[in-house]
Structures are given as C-alpha cells and as structure tokens.
Image (tube, rainbow, N blue to C red; front, side, top):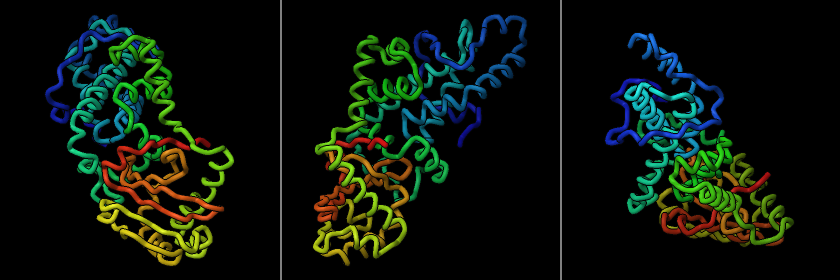
Length: 335
C-alpha cells in the first residue's frame, strides 16, 4: 500500500473543489481553527499529519468501496492529503468529515473519468492473468481487500453509474445522510435517495424464478464450484448431466477455455484443469438465475451461466467478451 505522504505521488491536474460542506457522521470532531492559533508551521504540519493518519483507514475504506481498486483508492487518499496540506484546514471544524467529503468528490471525479473512457473497453482494465494485479499494486493485498468487501458486490458496483455508486456506498456502507450525499454529488437530497435506491435494486438483482427454484440452483452451482476448487472429479461428475454442453466465447477461449465441449467427462476434465482461477469465482445472480462471476481483485473477467435441469447442470455458457459482459444483469445473492 502506497502510504507515503510525499507529494510527488499525488494525482496531477486536479484543482481544489469549492468550499466543502462538512459531514457530521465522522467518529470525532476537531476544532481546528482554535488549535491553529499560536502554532508554529512545523508544529502545525506535524499536527495535520497526525490527524490525517488517524482518519486514513476510514478514508481508504471509503475510496476503495467507491473505486474497487487499491491503487486508485491510494491515489484518492493521497490527493486528499495534498489538498489538506495546501489549505491547512483553515476554518474547518470537522476535519474527519471534511476529508471524507474531499475523498468522496475525488473518487466521484475518477469514476466519471473512467466512464468517459469506457470506449477503451473492459478488457483494457482486466488483469493479464487469472491471479495478476495492476502494475504497482500488491495482488495478495488487493485480493484480501476485495474479499473483505465481497467480490460479487464489487463486480455489481462496477456496473452502476458514478453517482449511483457514490450514493449507495456513502449511505448503505458508511451511513451518511442524503443531505450530506447530495452536497457531494451536486444533486437534491431526494435525487440522492433515488440514486441509492436504484443502485440497491441493481445490486440485489431480480430473480426470474421462485425462491425455491433459486435455492435449488444455488445448491447445484455451489456444489459445482466446490468440486472444481477441491479438484474432486467424482463430485463434479455427480452434479453434471451426462450430456452436458459447455460453450465458451472467443475471449474465454483466449483465457484458456475450450470453444465447445460435450459430455460430463470432457467438461469435468476441462473445469478441473482451469481450477486455478476458482479462487476468484463467486456465486452471483446472472440475468436472474444463479451463476458464477470470476473476478480477481473484484475486476470482472468471466461469467458462467448455468442451465440447471432436475438438479443437474445441462449447459454452461462461459462469457468473457466485454460487449456480452456489459449486457448482463448482475446481482448479489443474499445469504
């Protein structure tokens, strides 16, 4: 984690925002103005550094859940430090809230810039391998962070519009009020509430069958995933229909899948051979039915759709082409 306070690691091209509204949900309140009086510059810098260090874990958590990337979260938090150094927190009564607002606005700008560059395609943002990470990041640390949030949650969050994602994260994950969120995203409180509600519905997904059907699908797909992770051929054969068919698109083939396979024995051997990537696989709703998302460090790589008939998997569709992934309705399975 890049935790240095050296300004050379800050983002470039970002200007300070207009005067910020102070969030009242912070864990502590600092009366900064009074403390500044009588401080020499060296003492003031040391004090600001200490206060920022105390806030940093929360700021990192906010930025990571908004951005889904450890490296980008580090950049957002670092830029918040640079802005604090420039302004000196003059006139700020709630430093923790001020910093949360700054980080949220920086993350929102980064999300908007990311969306504007979508034409670069999803593929450009995917890891080079099923376990690799972005340059300059720690793949193991990023995987732990992603798992702490929920890989499927990060995948679905990435399908939301920037304002939806910010409203949902700040309200549902960090308990900020809609008045506070509205000031960050530049909307009315009622609009912020609608954005969070819309995001919540997207994240929950819309099952196409009954709860009983969903439970049966989940049991079957979970058994498939457990067998692949455990390298258990017999358990895998038990959950596959003898005449199962697997289809993989061109992007999935480039990542090691075979275009089309027939029969439980053939599909089982192929699934076990590709089992190394199962660590980054999680159950999720895919177009209203139970499927699997493969998302190392929370970055969507592959989606598996299953056709379950009579408790057996009759068909598997492996998708990796960005155009197809962008068209899927993904949701998080509730416990």
